[in-house]
Image 1: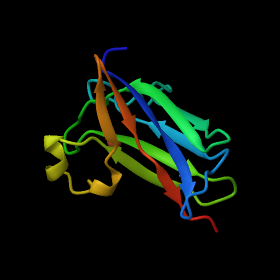
Image 2 (image 1 turned 120 degrees about the vertical axis):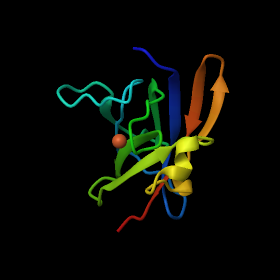
Image 3 (image 1 turned 90 degrees about the horizontal axis):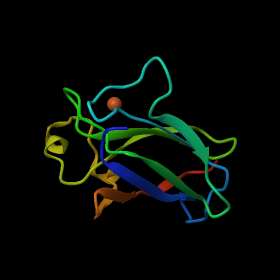
Image 4 (image 1 turned 45 degrees about the vertical axis):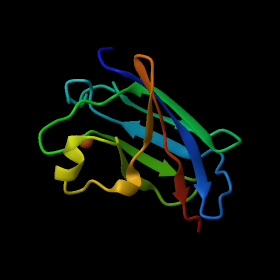
Length: 128
Ligand code: FE
């Protein structure tokens, strides 16, 4: 697939910093041209965190589309808990400052790794 490869990793944690095992982490995002696959499942998929609360997604940097800065969509859900639906953003994107729903708390940590990128983000969930 066209685009810059990214390995996005992180943890799902509780507010007291305990790992959440078997949390659902469901991503979807635009392709390198800023297009979503609204017919099939390209660049859409879910996984469950491991016994340490970790997830790892290998994908590409999403393209931008009019009105939005660069972003991943994600839903995160601990077993039998409420669904958190949110977005993740890239640092140093000119579009961040122009996007009305951009939130700096949702910036990933992103590093260059040769021709690819390594990104990380930890989700913190309130468990009822
Ligand atoms: Fe979007």
